[in-house]
Length: 248
Image (tube, rainbow, N blue to C red; front, side):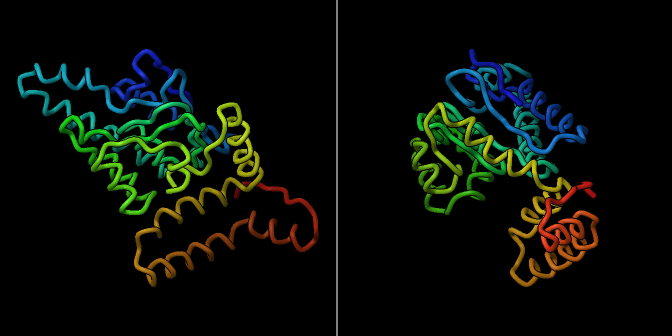
């Protein structure tokens, strides 16, 4: 999946958000798919919401309120669709990921950034606090790191983003694809059924109280154990052979 509007710095216009949503749906229908890589063409990963599009809506009778709500709701839907997708979504980031663009990276399951990448939630600088990007950001990094970005509007370099957990790896520009491939090679070798169960369970349990999380994950483990691929995988391990997955 490639963001491909470099002239607008891959701004998340309504059209761009709908394209991402459609691509996620298509990937879900593709039973051969094992992972999604999200990258971008041009010097920026994404500048965030299309401010020109939003500003134009102020000329409408309601001063743009309905359009603003539509945009923010669609963006939030896309971010949740990434989190809830059966496939792992990996961001390959070059250049700047700003505001909702940073939110997009934070919503992905894994992220590899080139060392020239920057991550910024600059809404505070223009009177529009990055409240929806804050949802994804605050679920990736500790409070003080998130609030530093949100309250100052200052960019975090790729190395800082790696240190605070916003991305998994910060690597030289020419090594981004190689590092993404390292992840996809390992993920695609696993049972797709197991990956789906595990990803869903991770996000479901992450904000539960401890005892509730253990009760929930106990049930998930039992359900997983009853699947063919669990029996096959355990059998293959004990028999010292490679498993044959059926993704069921």
